[in-house]
Image (cartoon, rainbow over the protein chains, first blue to last red):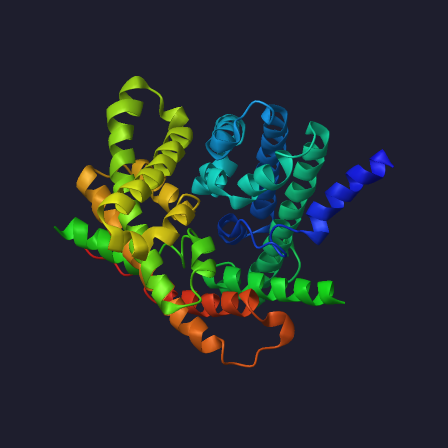
Length: 197
Length: 193
């Protein structure tokens, strides 16, 4: 039963309340880093790492933080973990860090993190908050990877760097800015249709 | 002088913050249902962005760099921006009632507008001087307002159109934004100076 409950929390974040396709949160990195499946997935995993840590930390300190100053406190917690991530990436994954560029520090203002802190972590136990972080983070990663894979496939004929069809048949516009908006719009429409059934 | 013109044209048209840098998408989707609110949001963003960029630029060059504390840039900037917005709200409420009524609703939303933090960080990454930073932030905000106003005009028309059920609302809006981004791609390659 207890285990089931945890899986339920993860499922909620992943599918039923998918942050990108259902709640429409965190649009900027969703559009900005999905030029290919790999960059989309990296961004999703980076956000997930910060989300799991910040959810656990916020759930752990929820007893001491006066409710009046809770939002600034949450922002500091999130910003701290983002800074840690930034330094780790600069040290160990410099090329990926350069590729994702400004979107790594901008995880701070990703509404998913503050949203989950306020809506979930501030009311639930540390373990439940971790599960919520994993579920929501995976949902975000899934969405970004799918979006990146579709754009990469339509634009260059590759998925995760593997050739599927010759590049000259691809339409570069899907890798560029307009494709991001159009593919995301179509995918949200698809998700709406599946959810309504 | 030419550098300033180049910064202005690049920030408004060539590297438009919404259509080519993907910053500030949340307000772009959220506040673009009506033309008036789009204009209000644009004005509020311009005000906050110029102020926040100046303050964070001074913070960066006068405090963080001499002390070798660049690594806490993210934390410092987000705190400064959040408190700046709060302060601005209080000051406007006391001093300029009419301005507060026009911009007040949008101010709390701006704290989580990634465009403000994004511009503050971009300016330090590119090594702009103070005046360049100020010009860059104002013209970026003009680009944001331009995008928002064009998009709001389209969305007002869109409400009258019969759209398939699953496409209603955000999906069709995003596809329109994609077409607009395609139009803005026409500016790419323009160079001045």
